[in-house]
Length: 130
Image 1 (tube, rainbow, N blue to C red):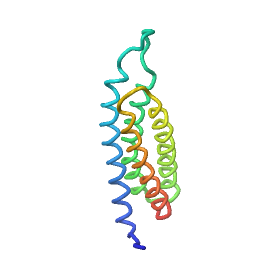
Image 2 (cartoon, rainbow, N blue to C red):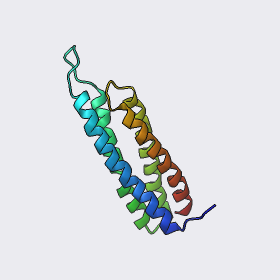
Image 3 (spheres, one colour):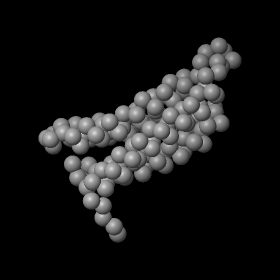
């Protein structure tokens, strides 16, 4: 079993957040082409909004990590950590919603879900260090 120093853990955690952000943008752009088409009843697919939500939420992960690391007080760090936990939960929920959509890009959501699980493990370890 190898142990990571706090700075290595922070770097890996931050890199995973950036990776999830870039992957979610790619997947959302891929899904957008399928979801932007109007349904036969003339309405737009509501899943289109979830694809935008994953971009917004995943883009908020890395800045929230930086904010937490820069805070001098533990209480403020924990507030940012709670925000990260909320964002992670929301991402899981939106990934599940997008897995049910009618698109060829659904398979890519499972990749994002796996990466988010890895992120969550790193997050749990990171929270012990702040």
